[in-house]
Image 1 (spheres, rainbow, N blue to C red):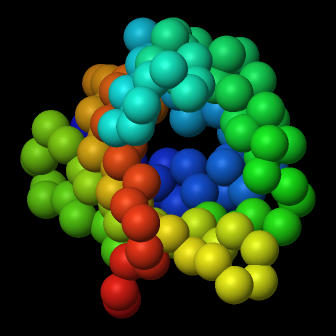
Image 2 (cartoon, one colour):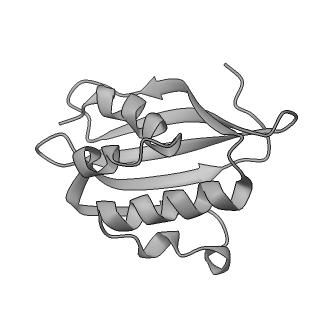
Length: 124
């Protein structure tokens, strides 16, 4: 069951509301980042606590001047997956975009995410 509200909250969580991970993530949670795994340990995340630690470290590594914004969500009623397009502002002069593909558990919590960051912002 897809819960689109959780996709809005996903961006809020990455913007610093880390405790949302406890509500959003399924007990079987995992995430795959489409970037060089030798630069991070994100692909080893298997629960909300690990995700919160990763997000804190990620934000600390890039500074506090980060802001994720949801550009658009794609999901059909009854679908097994949802997709969101997002932008990340990194400082005053740089924006990159990305795409997340979400799989939900039967309770509507996020079970699996595939996340890829691009080199430029997503055009609305």
